[in-house]
Length: 336
Image (cartoon, rainbow, N blue to C red; front, side, top):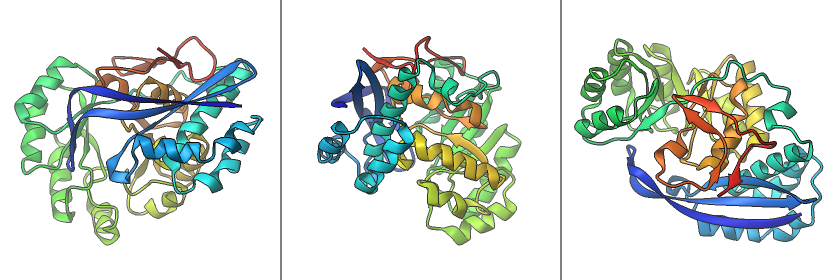
């Protein structure tokens, strides 16, 4: 197998702000695996919160290039198990390799990835579109610039209730709120009560992951469902989220790819929890991979390509929240 690394730095359409940082550019790394005349693509994202940079990711993958290139792909799952001991401290890098392996494997079978799994795509959930923290005037402007059926609203300010009230005046769309760990117990409960009458569907990660006792209190009294993000990174976290959250947001980059994500989905459903996959602002390469998990999901946030002013690839298209698959085998992504 041949390994090629493609680093990118893509500009956002607008400065992207959450409760802890702002950024204008998203560094990304696309991994390409080639075997038997076929090519598979995977992607991972730079993320300062998890101390991952593209140079660090490249170094981690290159350190095990001989193992990767010496392998002949049989199944993505077997490849992941081979690589996990080498990448257990860098699941971001493992994710890109795993996505590329799934893409390549499906192409070997000349099937779309969801067809390999025997899934029905007729009832796929729609993706939301994220409105980052800004002045309320600018947030309204972004709504009007991008009419959409579901919005994820980033919060974590002193005026969160006022922001949702003002945004509600301009759209009847469903709102989802993501606080990125910015609130405490009383603020979460107060906001949940206020948001319930304002058309908010759920609240994502209201409090820091380490505040387990606080989340128990919130879970017992919240007026809205709670979805884990920073509290659910890897497979071991799913069980710990039971009794703290009503559902989990699985991000492929954080958990190490599609292989562990499918196990996390199964585990969460056995526990009676809802399941979502989220975005780390990936381009169309990573987003095309996420799209094939849609039949498993209750919710999805896969708006990365919509937030970026530039892209790495052609693949799935997103129209009014609905995902349209590329008419190609694998994940459907091809580098531009």
